[in-house]
Image (tube, rainbow, N blue to C red; front, side, top):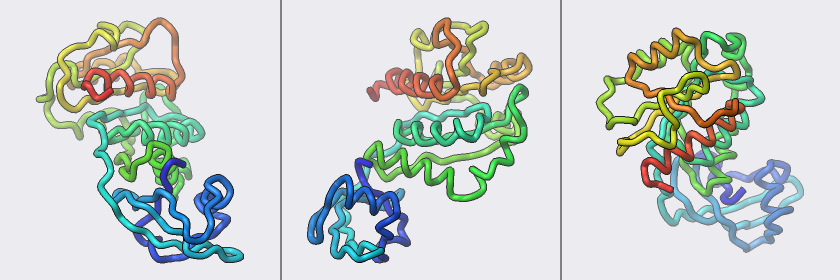
Length: 242
């Protein structure tokens, strides 16, 4: 944790010392009463917290806002619904990378039961995004949306009026070009990454009609989470952010 984040309604309330954040403050940062640590409010200000008191079961702290965090990067990623255990890692990593939005779409070749995962029904998905933001030293969380099919996701998109090369569909079977060779993207980029079995031929056609360019990441078949990380980094490079 490079910054400790709190939900807005947690400010002014005691924090359990057994909460992972409380344990981090005491065992990793080794803070004592009166000492400060970097903190922030989820989707709000960055600042610092003062550890006011260490109780037997709780910590008391006060928060002082200092400034606004950096905005999220204009990269939107849509992913063929992965296994829940993979999804947890994905959300954390994509939040750390600072993408603007994450969309999950059940694909033709994916396992439909993943849509009913308890991971998306409670706080688990939000907690994963917060963990990623704390690693990335920001308070901003990507938006997270779930679609029952790729068709529904694509129907939600506006007409492709972005710059050329701004919509990319990863395809390791018969891509038009390598991702690194794409040119023309100057605004927000949308990147589509398939699930374990990739996209179906029907879905490839849907992407093409929606203005997506198919691009590859080389000859090797990558895990979904690896492909997402590589694709986001390449998109950030294309936009001149890194």
